[in-house]
Image: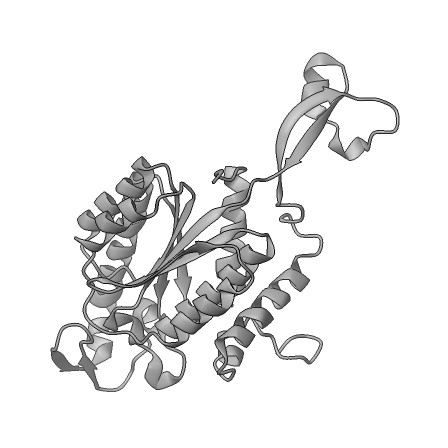
Length: 305
């Protein structure tokens, strides 16, 4: 619960009780924006353009003090409105994303909420957003649009999507790289249970075509911290195998393997010049929105359509 006594709609435990995805997204974005106020992201919708000499009456907060220290002259930073962004969100809907459903909020539920929330935020900035869902094939491809009704289409497709099939991007991503025609931002939301060599090659294809790429690596808290205590039957979601084991005997080795895997994923994304964020399903939803805005602050630019 929030300090005010009102529900914290950024908390996945609160959100899982709200069945309507469009309502979830609106509450997440409203809660996120209300929390920004004097944050470092304030004013992220403009970018630096040029300098001009200071004249009396100019707002001194725009003085470039670094230039003054070198030239002993006052210059003002001028800014311009950023051009509209063309963003495509690529969402994993393979069977492994269904993990967590027995506890209420699966990885896919979290990912769908984050996707709808990010779409809501982008469209509020008049940006165009597209949605692609995939497993071992492209399941749905909604081309990017900034039309106000487009959010309803995105939400509808997310609500109609159920995780199925195994993950296989070998043919999927190279095809998508050719289908996303306008240079812009590509956002991948996935648990990344795939061949990392194939992932790196695919990400590089997007970069070679001029896209900026952000990867949200979504993992369930169980997968990251392995909290099991009693003898447990582990069942594969994409591979039909079962293992009955004492998790306490497995924990150390499991966490070592996961740690090495996460390190490889990080290096894979770095090698492809891609922005990477690990997201735990226990994280509040502002983790995704904050990571996105932090990325935009660091790059300081938007691609023109």
